[in-house]
Amino acid sequence: MLLRVHPGPSRFCSPWRSPEKMTGSTRSWFRVVTADTRGQGRVGSRKIYILPTGYGFLFGILLLLLLIGSINYSNNPAFLLTFLLAGMFVHSIFHTWRNLYGLQIRWLDSEPVFATETAAFRFRLSDPGGREHYAMQLSYAGQEPAIMDCTTGSDCTLTVSKKTRHRGLFRPGRLIIETRYPLGLLRAWCYMESDANTLVYPRPWVGALPDGAPEYQGSPSGDRGVGSDDFVGHRNYHPGDQPRHIDWKTYARDKGLLIKQFGGDRVDLLWLDFEQLPETDTEVRLSILCGSILDLAEQPLQYGLRLPGKEIAPGSGPAHAAECLAALALYDTDHG
Image (cartoon, rainbow, N blue to C red; front, top):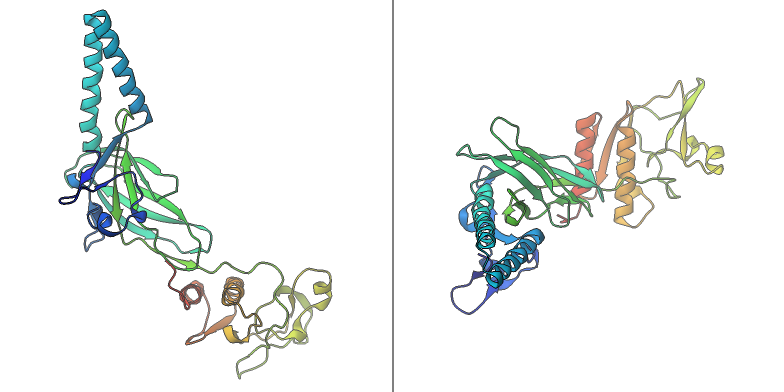
């Protein structure tokens, strides 16, 4: 129950060892729940590991002391108490194992996040046989578990979190499914390989932009001029804005690069061009473009995105912003 013996040479696998650290023949027979074509996996009897918890080990020591005392004093009531407690412990092994057995897990969805933020993955728990499962815990390695009871008639949906590090298509790894029901003396758990993933956008640039910003590239239909009407306010600088529209007085007061806006401004379209950014570091360029897209998405302005090997036509709205951010996230990277 504690160790799974490999048929052949004398090798064994400690079930508490992280599966991500296993290599070679150890990984080849390490048992995990795998998702089917519908994206859901079922916990089978041969996928479950079970060990006493800290309280379980203390309970075992207590039973041993009771047994020694009962033998030493030949006390029949003490023998009865010892065997009752031992029977309860053995019985709880079955209930802990059964509480995990037969559970069906399916990944539902996840929302994109920015680099270094925590991604949330939604899973649905069910049982084809209609059994109820109590105190179920789902987590990823190194993260706090999400806990809930999966009972008949309830929405058994759990959100499991994992912190991201890099932009790209993020895959959180193996899901840990565990339970300590009913007495907390034993921990039964298994691992699941799911298709869970989410997009991680570059971290938006915060603060003043680097010097040497590129010239604006406008559409043939007109210039993004300051017009002749009254001054109406400022907006944040975007790569491609003309330097003559920058409010240099506010920049001198360390308030960052701001663009002066007038009532007669004609807004056509704006190109966000990766190659025109002065920075040589790819991640800094993507970070600046990401911040610009987030700012432009809140304004009635059409903008396009140019990356090496990819161009997104000008547009506006949440769907267009999501398309541009996805292009930044997946640009020249295999992070996951």
